[in-house]
Length: 192
Figure (cartoon, rainbow, N blue to C red):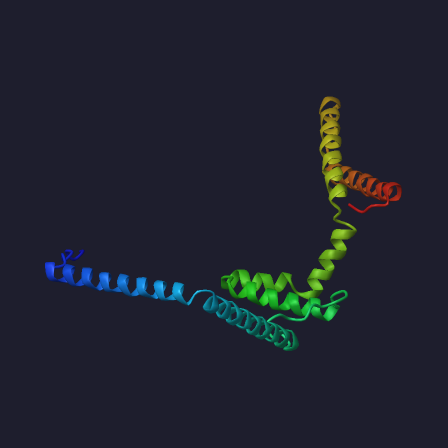
C-alpha cells in the first residue's frame, strides 16, 4: 500500500520561499560583483582554466602510458599456428566430461562406450570404406527393384525364391555405389 502524501504546512511554504529569495539575492550579488571586476578576472580565469586543462591532459596521458606498460592479465595471449593433437584431445576429453556429467546414468555409460578411442577409430574406418552413404543407398535401391522384378518373374513362371536374391541384389547395388563414388572423385577431385 502507498502512504498518503503529506501536504507541507503554510509555515514550511513561507520558510522555503524565504530561503529561495535569499539564494536568489546572493546569486545576483555574485553576478554583479563579477561584472564589476570585469576583464581582469576574466583573463585570470582563462589562464587558470588553461593550466588546469594542461595538467589534466598530462595526467591522462601518463595513466594511458602506465596502462600500456602493464601486462594485461585478463586477456589470454592469442595463439598462433595450428592446434596440436595433444591440445585437441585434451579439449575433447574436457568437453566430453562436461557433457557426460549432465547426462543420466544409462546415457552416460553408453556415451563412454561409444566414445572409446578404439570404437571411434573402427567407426571412422568403416564409415569411410564399407558404409559409404552412396553405396548403401544405391544398394538399397537396386535391391528393391531387382527383387521386385525377380519376384514378379518367378511368380509368373512358377519358381520358388531362395532368399539370396535380396542379398545378392544389395551387393551389386553397393558395388555400383562404390564405383560411382570412385569415379566422381576421379573426375571432380572433391570428396563429398
